[in-house]
Image 1 (cartoon, one colour):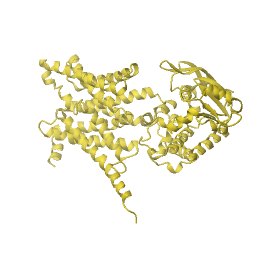
Image 2 (spheres, helix red, strand yellow):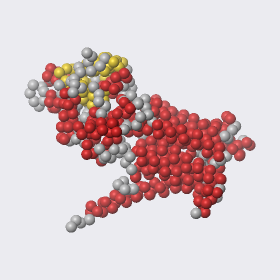
Image 3 (spheres, chains in turn cyan, orange):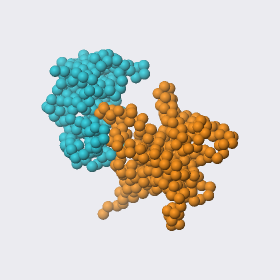
Image 4 (cartoon, chains in turn purple, brown):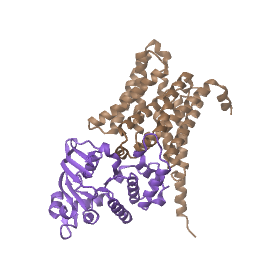
Amino acid sequence: MHDALTITDLTVAYRDRPVLWDVDLSVPAGVLMAIVGPNGAGKTTLIKATLGLVRPAAGQTLIFGRPYAEQRRLVAYVPQRGSVDWDFPTTVLDVVMMGRYGSLGWLRRPGVRERDQALAALEQVHMAEFAGRQISQLSGGQQQRVFLARALVQDAQIYFMDEPFQGVDAVTERAIVAVLRNLRAAGKTVVVVHHDLQTVPEYFDWVTLINVRRIASGPVAEVFTEANLRATYGGRIAFLGQQGAAASAVGDLAADEATG
Amino acid sequence: MELLTALFADYTLRTVALGAALLGVVSGVLGCFAVLRRQALLGDAMSHAALPGIALAFMLTGQRDPLVLLLGAAAAAWLAALLVLGITGTSRIKEDSALALTLSVCFGFGLVLLSLLQKRPDAAQAGLKRFLFGQAAALVERDIVVMAALGLPALLCVALLWKHFKLLSFDPEYAASLGMPTGALSILLTTLIVMAIAIGLQSVGVVLMSAMLVAPAAAARQWTNRLSIMVLLAASFGALAGVSGALISATTRGFSTGPTVVLCMAAITLGSLLCAPERGLLWRWIRGRRQLAPVD
């Protein structure tokens, strides 16, 4: 049985600046994994390199033991909400149906089946009543749930989510957590770029800490320690709780306030 | 009314109207994608860059066949798009500056070639100057055939690859993650926009052609929240402006077609900006008044 995700010697550079340096990582199937690290640590780049969206300078990523190009159908992707123009002329249902485009082939249009799948996915994220809504009329949290529904209709084995909790309301946060748990219960693997260190032990069972290099990766109980967090965030960290679990990255909170 | 009767009776007017309608539909449809992908300025740079292409095609072949000239235009427009990509990719110059640079340099080069050609005895009747501001009245059947040969395949492409172009315009990275060849699709879409530009060059001209890409799309966006309806509306607006502008200029002495078509299009766009429900300025103003009004 292969790991869901295997990354070896991955190095990515923008111009001359390395964003990821010699990263090795293996993620067993069936875990909910958080990727944490300070801003600019390469979290988003790690996902994009895995999906072939940025070209690595060196290294290899495998999905269930084979290159991504051969395993696309097993992978679903939730990009950052801010990466698209929400004034695009389209509806909620239409965006969710885009998740089926990869399986439709070149000339086929989405039909009744795709529509039903999209509606079911919207149901899961409590957005069914918004199906006909123009996407510019959604709140940030609702936009995030639409993107999540679009990934759900891909019916994948491994899900990559880039900052799904960024700046969302409490309803959305609960909805996303419920979806994550359902996915784990169904045996899927989920990789989530995550900002809020406090919720890592509650939401996830596996964690990877990166800051250009991989600092640590493994079960939350073993790896999410004060020493590893200090190594990841440097001096910018203030610990709030005991056992090294509840922690808050000062630098990140400041960044959240600035963007959120 | 007289105009309408003339339209059906007069062969020249019919040719002009058909050409203008074709141009309006094709540029309206492809303009939607150019606008949604934020490539409106790229369209402007490409259409200006078509001028040296036309002049060079005539210089090299000595022919004024529309196919030869328009292929020259399309090739030059394409090179201009590559030039913009090359400048932004290899230097610190940002995209807006690269576009301005490409547009003015190519257009200047085109004007120099045009004045060189004016001195040649055989160029006097070549009528290349009409490519500056367009002259729909000079369209003949052969022009329409060439325009249709470029335009209809372009429209067919959009219809067949609808969902690809839609996702490419909305969320290109997600499209790539699904395995769509976004690089190739992007090149194809740019090529189709180049074809739309080539179609409009004879009747609207290189200077104002980009308005025919941008304005119908902008006007259509006001009326709808669906891409399919937006594309159909833009095609209709483009055709309406094209036909009315071309007929006005063809029946009035000394009116270039390009400016007339663009003014017609501007009227449609202005009307849409003001009157469209939800997004229109009048609508918003009325809604604002209502909210201010005292409640019993």
